[in-house]
Image (cartoon, rainbow, N blue to C red; front, side, top):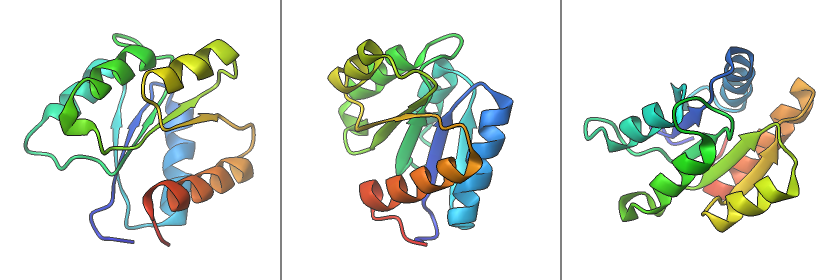
Length: 135
């Protein structure tokens, strides 16, 4: 893994943050993970010139302040963020949400699984296929 591989997770549920972090770090302990708790924090993080742009963003749809859909739109209207893959990572499997996410620029859509094993496998496949991320 390249030493400075940067993941940003936009998620407001503490348990989901914990499981996400555990799974990603199990895949590769060298990954750096920034957690933002809502869309406003995410946008502020991306616009912080002191921070490196992330290699990938995992974005929950259901968040306070600015939800995932609005966050996605705000990110995709800024050319500076065009090359960052955005993975929607949410509980919803509604067709309308999936369609809306892809229409507004999401690269992937993952419904949160019910088991840690499934979560681990999804992340392992996702990170390897979308970013060239290696263990």
